[in-house]
Length: 239
Image 1 (cartoon, rainbow, N blue to C red):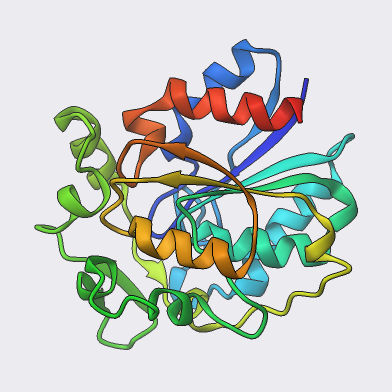
Image 2: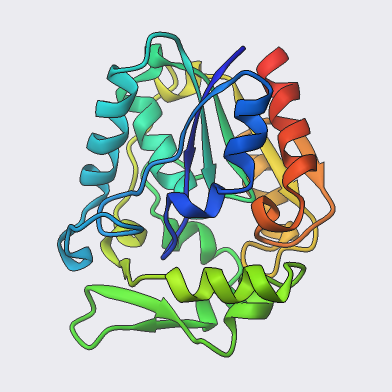
């Protein structure tokens, strides 16, 4: 059995994995799905949160784990898990990018999304007046994140979204071959994703090769296809 740590994306929280955690636990795995600073139920003011804060929280949790962890990042969470791998490579069994941003060293999240400047993800963002946080246009959220999600799950998710610390998207990562590069990488493509589109997913994997698995779904497979997602995570755990 494996230990999983599930890292959420922008504006969400550990709650987004609520259908996945019990399925993994029922299969005998240990699962941790934390809230990143400033998101979910974490009380940190989001305007104060940095990428270093995210990495510190993930690193502290990893240090408590008894065995190497499969670290899964969704969407913007790919930035955090990449930098966390640089900091704690010996604590990791694998990195898993779930329709996630897969950054190059020296690049920030906005550089990766900038590879598709007309993407709905970028066009839907709404910066706060002080520029410290952003949200997404509420009328765009259902098609952006929850296109194939039930109306009930879509509504419940939208009620729990919080402003995203903007600096996470503008901070370049520093990754090296002997640290980040030494951790096995998997990418789970989501072919109907409207946020990080399939074409961008393929471009990032071409630049930073991974073992690729695929889901025929939108941006939130933890809601729309939790059983199929868990099957892929089981495949990774057995590898």
